[in-house]
Amino acid sequence: MSANRKVILVVSALTAGALAFSVGRAVVRKARREETRSIEDIRKEQGVPVRTIPPLRTNLTAAVVLDGTVEPRERGYATAQVDERVKRILVDEGDRVAAGDEPTLLVELDDREALAARASAETAYDDARANFARAEALFKGGGISEKDRDQARVALAAAEARRVAAEKRLANCKVYAPIAGTVARRHTDPGAVTKMGEALIEIVDASSLKVEARAPEKAVPHLRAGMPCEITIGAEGNREPLRAEISALNPELDPVTRDLTVTCRLADPPEGVVPGMFARVRVRYREHKGVLAVPEEAEVQNAGHAGVYVVTADGIARFRPVEVGLRDNGWVEIVSGLRESETVIADGHRQLSDGARILVRD
Image 1 (cartoon, rainbow, N blue to C red):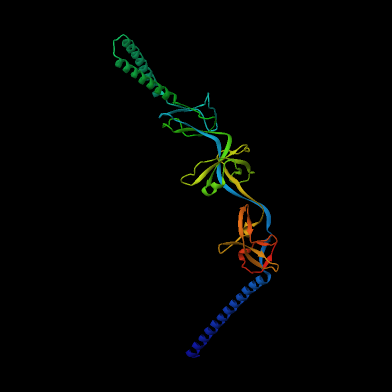
Image 2: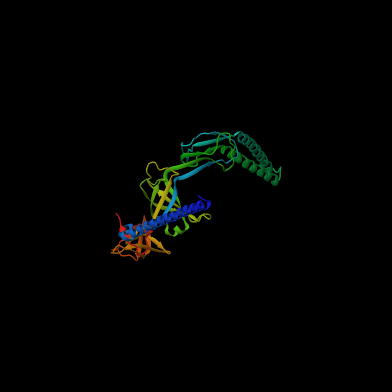
């Protein structure tokens, strides 16, 4: 076989292979188009699967929902009134403490310097009192002037002030409970040096509880003291809501967060509710009775307008603009645009367009 003939045969084989490949690809494309068309044809013939629901006549309420924390009735801090070293702590977390006429001693500070200062101040006071007594006698006998007598009186007053201050410093070396309750936290340890005003022991009075929640600025106009509310305790929300009322509203917003502190008293909290737990407060401020409503998932936004898909008698989905009102627990009020006798599409409408045929599923 000549070289030219071999070349011709190879070229012919390659051409035939390319032609076969092109034909195969065309067949695959055609099959896919037919398959796609068949799915679309089926959808047009049978309809888009949807779930429908009739509108419901019900009562809806507008509510403010706030997140907060369970707090004790009162929280007190035993603070240091002198700069001194902690000698002994007499209570631990969980201990019950008393206040009033016989308060519980919580912390003892090193009082050696205070004792020395008091002894010095008492000696100085005794001397000043004796000097004033002598000056008073001499003045009455004409032995000294009134000015000298007055100087002795001023010295006595100063010595008395130093004696009182020394007594107070010594007394402040013992730190007592400011309120009755339970020790929540110890903020110091033996050997630590305190600073005036530093919190040493934190005490909570959990004889009654309250919830403190934060309300955003837009919710404030809907809130007032005395309004009933429902409180769910715990992050999981598996407790029965407690009925309570708003006992107080902070008179001003937080300047940073623009939130308002709302306080609700828990008159009879169930066992197991303790300070620090998460709480959710629901305050209803408006109620619409006997309104037409649909599930919120049935609402569709179309070009910025609210609407629903209604089902016609011949199984066609039609988009219907509506005016919505209150929202409550997954339902939305339909103010206008929908009749009670109509049926709306609650699920499956994301794949719909106006005029599409539907297939209602259970």
